[in-house]
Image 1 (cartoon, one colour):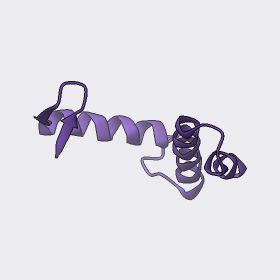
Image 2 (tube, helix red, strand yellow):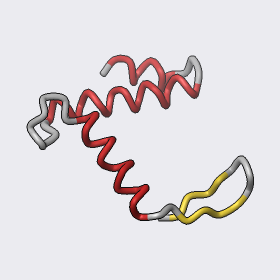
Image 3 (cartoon, helix red, strand yellow):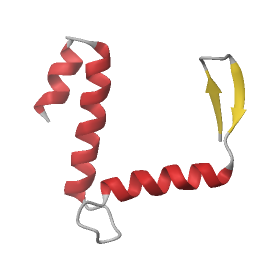
Length: 70
């Protein structure tokens, strides 16, 4: 996976071990009940957080209002 570092305008190759740590961290945060799976309710909760964060970045728009309704 390659990420673009927009602050410095350079192309950055992300080391695989860093990606694994990132993915593991995301999974651990999503697996609230510690079952080593992400069930539908945990997935929905995380998706709501993501949508609200995106909507907050857009400001007061219809997208923000819709995301908060979930």
